[in-house]
Length: 213
Image (cartoon, rainbow, N blue to C red):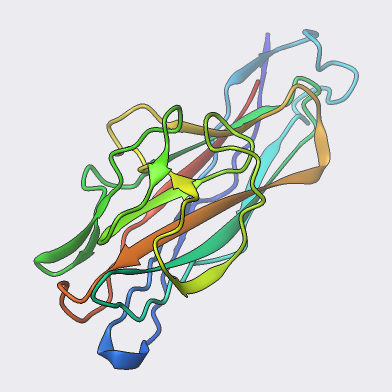
């Protein structure tokens, strides 16, 4: 006999905002979804969630707008999304992420800002016309703390590319205990741009998935 956690409904939010000097880089990164694996009845979760009550839900702070005023040498902006997972499963949960598409670039018509080729195990500093993500103290990202910054020179903070929808999801958080009051993970997105890219709004979306352990 199994219990299956109940996912929350997926939703998509988009946003854009205009920059000085006519360039807009506004990432619409948040297509949220949740799914759940079957939980063995009486296996570690019986005391905390019985008879189908072991649910899991996921929420986000909203779309992430990353505004940049580019320079010839490149300018970078870092902003975050806060993703909260709530579950009464005493074995905890795992939170992962992929791009919502096989195209991992931020796209503006035929123009694009490419995703970093670095991985969570070996993240790297962003270069001009690249974007990526990081989670402090996960994999090879380092402890941080990462902070929101706008129009800075290329940071030494290390980022990785969001994997494509058909790739291996990146693990953002994993716990071995219930999160009945909700546990929040900060996902930081960095974008760097120079004056070689055309004006406009560059967008992409990512999918977060939370599963019970």
